[in-house]
Length: 124
Image (cartoon, rainbow, N blue to C red):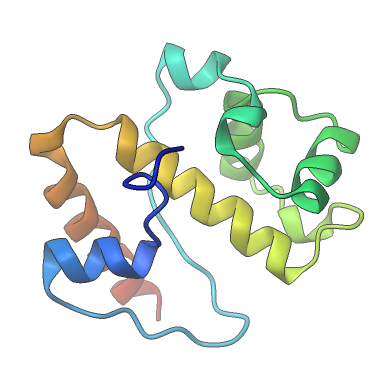
């Protein structure tokens, strides 16, 4: 990922929606992941994860972003994966969000962030 792509979720939300997400410890972050053939076949190395998060996903049998997205959609909790603690879970979800955000066309990104904000507001 280049410097522009590695902006944090908070910075993206603030820049596009003009609002700040307040985080609760242990809180969950919800977003829709639109799986296309490119994302489905992309290796998890594309997410540029840290060593611990990457190794825990590989040990659990995830080799593509599509595999991971499908498992999460089916209800698999990544926090239950061996050696995948809260920081690794957060990193994985943030990188999945950033991957989704950066794969969208430029004109669709702002509406996607607003969709994510509404989705999380209704869950809190």
